Image (cartoon, rainbow, N blue to C red; front, side):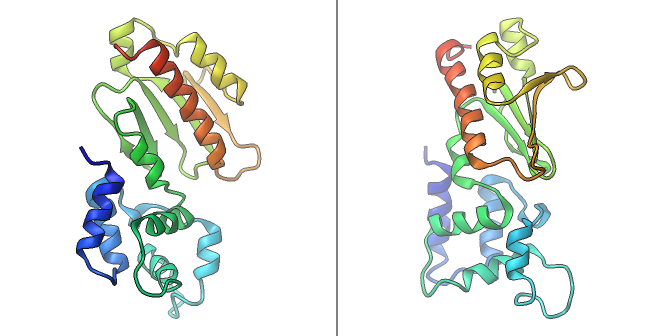
Length: 205
């Protein structure tokens, strides 16, 4: 079975050398089920594109900003480069999302489910502006293990990188003190902690 990024590249190649923002948005929605029109544009990307993409004074829309970045490239652009553009504009890491397939981690981000399967074990749920994260077990995990909380070793791993248990939401929680989006390095550590526990203790659940 092909990874989602490989499927994306195959679709993009079918469009030929010159690809439009509309085609990119369609492919991302088709393969990843992410509607980029509903994902907020990051302030830095908006600031860079503002004034060049829209002369009407209207709010910049996602396709206009994508077009601005596409125009920085001469000739053909690869799927990998397009994914970098999407990450820069929206903070949506399609390579990271693709790597979660089969990981048994559900991911809710940018106001929508990005990855979710019936037999996933844990949920990573990020807030609207990506500045906070909460982590909790799925109903399936509780049904299979009898545990209503995260396993102890995962609690320790998350606590060591800055999470704490919030009784109000019954989840392990992290809020970036800077008020900015959680950095990518922190996301990698979070996913690594969860994946390690799944591999070591729950691969047969």
